[in-house]
Image (cartoon, rainbow, N blue to C red; front, top):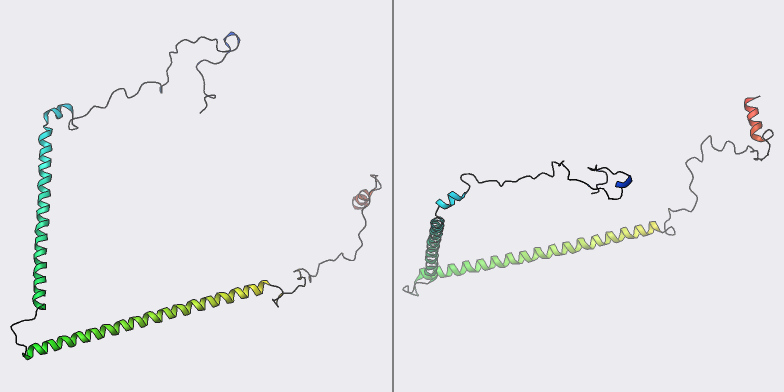
Length: 229
């Protein structure tokens, strides 16, 4: 920023002092912005880790205590996690064992036992019914997918036909040779059939003349006719 508009301590003078030959003495005036500020550091108060407080504290013991608490809490978390994991593993193993027992066929039952045969036949019938239901559902799903695809194709084809029709209509309207509504006649103005139009069409206008005489020219005669008659 320029300082040309700011006042100076020693104003410029003419004569022998002009041109920088003037000798200045030390000024006894100071600006408030030139004075030193913040000459002292902000001291710490009690409770803000002063030198005396740090000398009285045992930092090594505090660090070891914090580490001990941290690792003890970490071990507790790991113990809880291992306990939960062991319980879930036991439940999983028990469930798999029960499933395996249910799947295994009893070997001590005779082959001629009617209950076993009826059970196996019922299970086979249920499996067949489930397979039939699954096949029916898959067939229904395929049919629905096919219908949706056909419907989408039909809509796309219909949309393309509509767009083509719109474009053809725009082209026909833009071509005056194909547009029957377009005529090459000059359009009538809105004021062609008004009452007070072209009333002075039959009147003859006097031609303008130039006469280099202020007394005999047309303007002077019109002025006299209007105001001096």
